[in-house]
Image 1: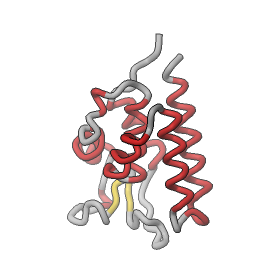
Image 2: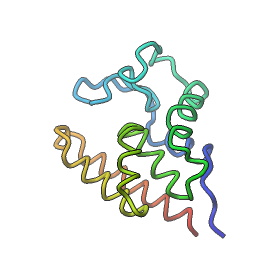
Image 3: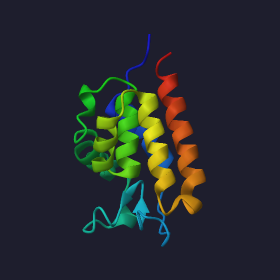
Length: 141
């Protein structure tokens, strides 16, 4: 029987992916901690974020914004990861264009490839998509 992906399962996976504090001037996200960027949340002390303080942000601004509780697993996780890494607005656009989990993953890769940051971050983004696809497939068995 497949294991449904809940918010907590998805959040735990995202936090493993996003890790800790980074301040890379070439990163489109800029100063980031646990996947939360200063550009998106200018009033937050990014350095002091913890898994406990980011969980409500992820729930409200990413998971709930996608209505992920009402999406089938593993689409909910793939869409959530897209929202975290590529923005909730972009995730909504890509989801409207995708007919399946595989289609959403392909659209995400296409969007990454068109990014002016592809040369620097493309390998990491591609690796992330492989991890997302693997986790999504594992949830089906």
